[in-house]
Length: 147
Length: 139
Length: 299
Image (cartoon, rainbow over all chains, first blue to last red):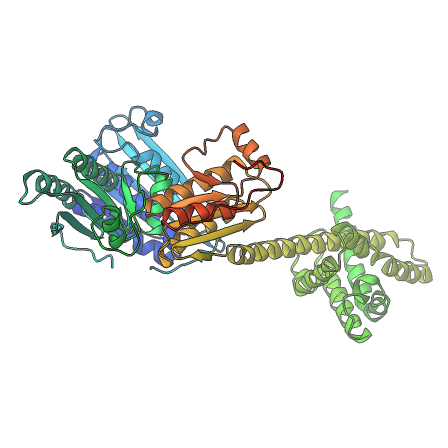
């Protein structure tokens, strides 16, 4: 990554209400960077999936949000970091319908489909880090503001 | 619009319109509040006070639906169906609909409507000008 | 020796720079009659001469700096815009990059002739030094022009693309609660996304229970586009509307089958009229059957 980075903010993910706070933070950052409504919604939804993953499977952790600038393009990078048991088989965990937490098993695989870039690093016993990046698209939205 | 409420989420009120339960969701719903709602609705259909023929969930004020809330909504509909009540999801926003589809959640078990009026029409409960269409067919 | 060679080269470059400066007026006068300048600067010959002088100055500057082969040499900065406009105007006149390149190549000979004449007068045995430097410098100018041409082309394409995306998705209200989005032309991923958002917004704005996506004017459908169509239909259903896809031409239907895509969950109709009739029927509005086509046997 040769993107120039601005400030990074760090938010804890340790409870149900932290999830709402993290979503709120990402929504605001995405709007400021210039994401259209659909892009905002996709990124916030991916955030919700990944933050819940950190909370439920990682036993809590934190999120780091960084605003990126590369040339004229702007973007956001989000890292979800936990020190939990890790994922033994990341490939299996990325499969649609695979679930250990009682959800629909769409968390990781679904979140990947909502963002431009997605990486998962995990070692059993040493925790998991999921990093996603999304860029402001050059495509105009029929409607950019909130409804 | 996305007013972040304090740490303890307020429970979602369940209104009664004849034999229809009307639930209006707003903004960002906490996981706990969603689970509480699922419990409340199922309890209400099963235990009364009155008989329940249908449930309308108005989501026109909801910013995001993730797989957790999606599961809760699908389970509310499934539970209601077991208790002979139909559930209609009303007013899902375009951006939320697109995101759900990309996420891989098409919620096939849910009947959907444009808005609350349309939802009541689909349940055959209103003297709306438009006659009820056939929600189960097609789609 | 390496150092000596280097010295000779930079000496030649400096000499070339001085020559260009000295002969600025003459070179500009000759270039002003070249096709490249004459057809772009049409208001007056003086205007063309001024433009030529700017390019000569830039070349002289680059030569003095000794960066004969460097397309990023600061000397070019003053004329980059001008060269871009010139190449752009030639491209708009219908000439391809190779032709424009040929016109730039044509600028060398008038200068080379002047150079030869000057050194012949002085009977200078080292004349090949500056001549070689001129060849290198003019080659670099060609690259600079090419770069600006390509860049201007890319900018034009992306601007037109944005404009096309904005205008190419009309929403037509056919009846109360029924809207149609007729698509014409090729669908790519970006356009499909805009179509999806436009159509879903129309559901809200027009309280449309039925949306018809007419693809009669779409020449081909690949698996990505078919997937987008299915996603659009699924999203419309989540919002409480029914999406009907009309105008799937036989060739496209065949492609879809060959790609192994299952459109089974999507409501389709042969024509926009059939789709409208279906939607009206859903609203319990009686639609008389369409006249039977000539030759078909009545039932």
